[in-house]
Image 1: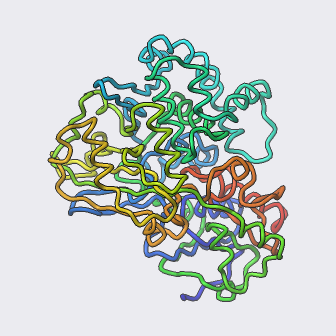
Image 2 (image 1 turned 180 degrees about the vertical axis):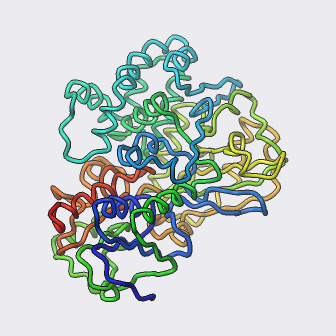
Image 3 (image 1 turned 90 degrees about the vertical axis):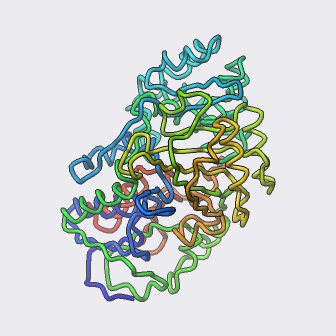
Length: 477
């Protein structure tokens, strides 16, 4: 391992949370170094040519619903450091077998009108939350904050703690509205009959109406690059190709912040974790994984519903019953024959992703944790169902199976892209039952990954909160 100079704080891992933690510490006047095991920074925000030369693919995250909402990112003004956000006309397209589609438009009313008789119910559900999104998002992405509007939070909470199935069945009568909500809720990677799965549908919908679901021009790697530029502008240092196996190899420093999962934390040599904390971390669970496909395409995807081309994200699964069945099967260890597929078509809105006239797309479906199964055929069949002729456009493909994700990013254990199962208890208490979930009970050590609140997403808030904990407890600022 490479040698390091002494710094006030060291951050292990250069994902959005690790970089955000480092930035907040550096902006507070501290000397900070980030060490990254891989040759490039970014964690789950990496981009590269996975298929053919000239075709740029996001290796993991591609669409960022919480990036423009993040209170911390809004402080940084990442545009000045190189990010150009692209907001497609619609956040999501949800096609159906009859050739129709529901587009999640920035306008609540335009979206509601596509839901026929369920439109008024959708408007009553979403409009109050959208109008108060600034307050609501600050609470949801905060930690131990008192809601500025308790009535709003009560309104949200009463619906959010429910299952997505209950929310859809009780509020809507038509299959289009129910299927549309199911697709949003499936981002939870939970069975749609489980509590809090409704919360994901609400947050996904309201964030789309409030700020959109943006792409980063040129690829998600540019988010990491912008965060790195911000860090170095405040004196921070980043070292890559430097895997850490033992705490003893770190130089003397006042604080260490780990952008890793609890499982990795348990395996660092010479880290003196107390027995009770070690036991809690050992019980931290990981959820289903994903099998992800990338394609170089000879043209745009030929959707039966042409309006699908107005959205970067397409939810493929049809009805509530079908999506719910698929998600339940995954938790039972079954590989669905008709999986829910989340597809992204960035080159429709960002021509830098592919050679002229060509396109890129990626998609994933949920699979049992650590699955070695290539779901490429099942994913392709689902796309063909709504876009006949898709298969004929494929110039090259690349697959990452669930059991291979950790080879690309050690935080994605078993293909779990959420840093841990988002079950009821782990949603509220991750990674352990502690008032300060970021402070490791070892002097000067902190956890700043998506295994801490508020969880998964490219928003940097886990790192920001961990850095604030370090400032309070180690640096007394």
